[in-house]
Amino acid sequence: MVAIRALPKIWLDGQLVPWPEAKVHVLTHALHYGYAVFEGIRCHATPRGPAIFRLDEHLERFLNSAKIYRMRIPFRPEELRQACVDLVRANGLGTAYLRPIAFSGYGEMGLDPTKAPVQVAVAMWAWGAYLGEEGQRRGVRALVSSWTRVDSRMLPPQAKCAANYANSALAKMEAVAAGYDEAILLNSAGMVSEGPGENIFRVKHDVVSTPPASSGILRGVTRDTVIQFLADEGLVFRRNDFTREELFTSDEVFYTGTAAGITPIREVDGRPIGTGEYPITRRLQARYAAATEGRLAGRESWLTFA
Ligand SMILES: Cc1ncc(COP(=O)(O)O)c(C=O)c1O
Image (cartoon, rainbow, N blue to C red; front, side, top):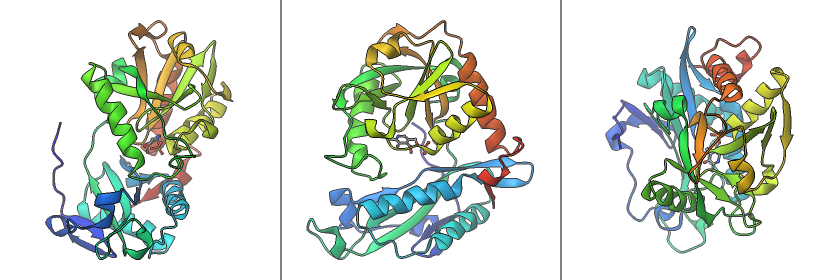
């Protein structure tokens, strides 16, 4: 585990403050009850300078997460957008991970979060591929978790709420303790849903599929990017449910996510996937790198330069 290396600034409640000063009280409401919504966004070095990838889509999901949770964010979308741009400029880092978070702050305890003030922060740090560079190259080993993905009758999976990540953490720890790299969660109907922090795709006979929103997933921005790439590449795509055993018999399986990028899965529950070559995953990885680094014609609107 690599410790986060401090950068000069964090944006907190409307101001850029020195990194060591971006602190909260131990009675911060969200720390006790998980009432926080957040985003994970990446900024990449491009020939025209640092570019934040699909910032508007991430901020839209951020505001939707807050709406689902009746959280009133005391900043306008343009202010949040500017906060991300200002932060990247202030920290002088071309390639980074950005973490906007809105949370019930200090001032009131008890289960009703609407009485606590809402605080908003955006931090950033240097973060390599979440499942490792080698994982992106060679593929990772995944374990189907004994934990079930939260579903919208329990906690809304389409809100990127901190509380959901207790479920993710249980699955992740189980996989790591069993000697795997990452987990795959089934939903309460027993169908494949997603990873703890990634969406999942399978390829069978050149048809690419991913579980629909109704399977209890977070609607990933990278998932949407890949779906658009599949159309660009003329590949057949379906949103459909699939089972654990359909993963075992896939030609290719891969995760998508802002943190993980596009990562092949080379083994599920000890079964090797396909031939160990990932031709479609490789094509998508190359296209994703080109898009994020400003080398993909026609996709410049996905980039916000800082
Ligand atoms: C549970 C979950 N699923 C999927 C994703 C992938 O979403 P995105 O591609 O927007 O990063 C994430 C990451 O934010 C996640 O936490």
